[in-house]
Length: 318
Image 1 (cartoon, rainbow, N blue to C red):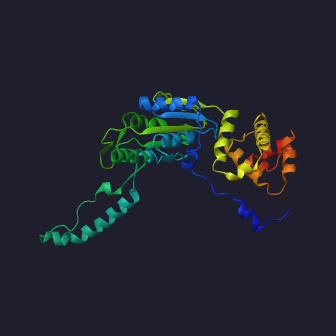
Image 2: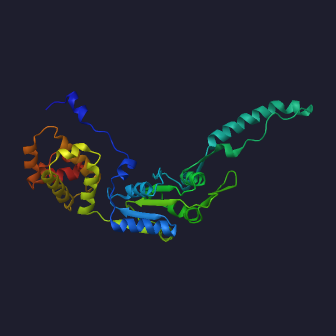
Image 3: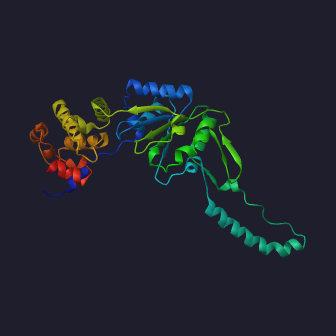
């Protein structure tokens, strides 16, 4: 088998969270959790495996409540609490301060002769950049409506990150240390805060007490709803017959049931796999049906889109 330029025509464009929100179908328990968090004014903490729809829930709420766009804050391993509040450009400030000092040295003689100082003190507020929580306040003040703030994958942050936000999320205000300025929503409108966690580690108890909690369990219903929603803006999935689609989902769930897997595939992997099956890059429908009907998981096509660990590949492929 050889590569040819024709394969480039089979690459579909990726969808956005905003587009996916139009197709997202939450269950009744998730809707209740969202309504509860909105009613009591507390952040909604959602846990669950990757691919269960935690991130989509925030975009769904923003869409349904006409509060788009979502202010999306992606947590990383080096994220600090201040990253959610504001950024002070220390490097630029000290550079400008050094340049100003040089200017003042040149003006000393002129000042002795009674001439005025040519420059004022640096305004530290000019070096402050609003970050997501501050942006949420500004959005509320401008629109008169609450902003939707998503703090995504909080369990990736350093251990102190959740506790460092207790006051800010509770009082919905903070102080810029460099300027001693208090920042809050002038209209006192609390943003709708959604927080997701893949449960890589347990979050601190004081933080949990300030949240409405909801766990999204990975099950067959989650998978079926994700596939149905995805098919609405992925026309290529309609090439799969209902029978082939059911077989593919069944094999996917069989694969997840393997206890020896180090990393089980989630809905993200499933949807990519289904797109590959629909495109049928190098096989016909009859061959695809035969492979999916077999309970031998080692014969599944495009296994590399489902398994992302070499030991898992060896375990399944044999």
